[in-house]
Length: 216
Image (tube, rainbow, N blue to C red; front, side):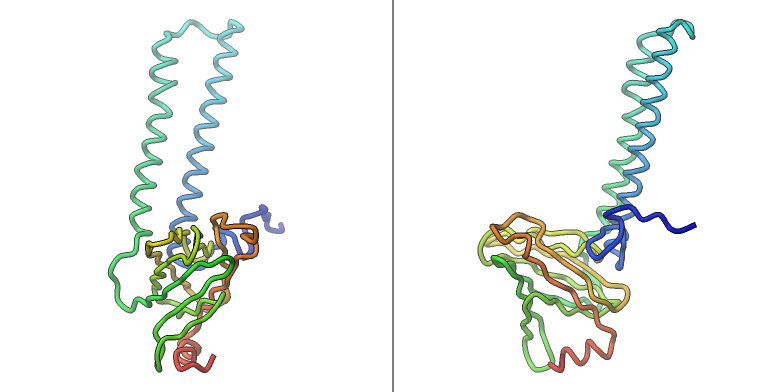
């Protein structure tokens, strides 16, 4: 059977078409939350069916305490607290922590483009609308803004982080394999917000060495 493709679940800006570990944590959380929501919906519909059956005389009397306390409060509380605990645990894994071989890049949002700056073999390398990173290594993106609030987001590589004037926020991304990944500003920043997009080029070892030498 051909694979069923749901709109938004695949493509260059899909959070479920993962290409790195940080994006994998986010996708896992999405699936778990979807499963929890489906379970709550199923249980709610089951209770609704039982209520209609009881109303039509299909079952005996049950106490209001069971319906309100046990089924109305305890059941959803257990599921929601479980989802909350899992979200907090998984969210901790997406926070940038000290690690070996981390590449640090400065990203600055503008109306309406992005600039990137990072160390190279012969000095700093500056690029516009294309962020170059090595595949298989963590990258800490230090995100700032030159004007208004923007938001740095590469859905297939990680979560999003706001670029706030006067502040520097750090987001860790990583590409498992070499490739070209689409990014965009995820915060409305003016009339041309929709065109405020960029790309991330993840290089293999040879390509990364060439980029650092200024050969790209």
